[in-house]
Image (tube, rainbow, N blue to C red; front, side, top):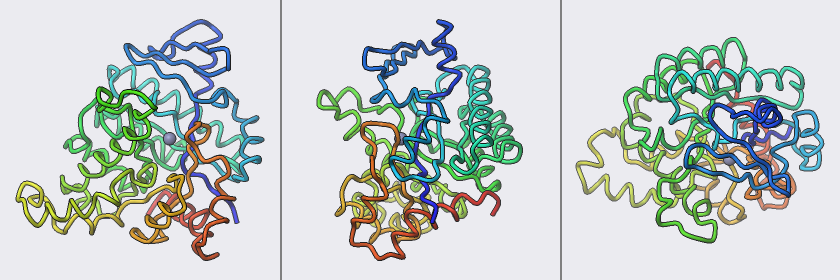
Length: 332
Ligand SMILES: [Zn+2]
């Protein structure tokens, strides 16, 4: 059985080259601190990568995967580098560059890597063009997208057009929290990540449901990061509102909880009980192993963790491998 991690991030090699040449990477300044952690400054936004492992090249990364007992990683760009607020031309160039690089990494080690691309998400025309290149020419498995588009929610008609094309192409979409919009109330204790990230994912999923997009995209393959954030646990409240308020139910053909199984969910809960609840609510066929490698908030020994749970052998095999093999089949 091939253990597949569908949630793992890279910093592009082109970023390391830019650092060595003392240049900006598509507008982002790159520094490294004493511990070897990478510091990215884009405009007013500053992000410090949580471990030095982000800097490890693709070939050496395989040793780290061996340590984690992961056979295959689905590579995706670190979300801090998504170019959703850049001018379209710059975003388009950056996306093409990253997508070519990930495709190269995959073609050098197809036994260990598969990949997701990125798109200049504010512009439907270039996004659809690049999405076709990602799927047909580069033979990647889909794309990573953020939980908002330059601080706006995902219920935008232009974004629906992009999703429609993704559905047609059979693209797998990893929906990932992007710098939380609730940063002004998160304060200390890393709450910007601990609370802000699941909140972002929940907000994104709620927008996809309540806009009616999930009705209009019956075959879309969207995986919600971090086990869907708070979505599985907020769904009763969503259903109650659907039965009570017209502004909530207006666009929907079914009650919100009926859409839960239209999404995929990764396993990143850091809790046996939490994961068991998600599996019970959603069903074992929609849960995919994820680690968030190489983040400090990631899961270091994912296989050991799943093997130590009380799930049946069959459920473990689905979560660790079988479900991902099916979800990553490109053309429906
Ligand atoms: Zn992640």
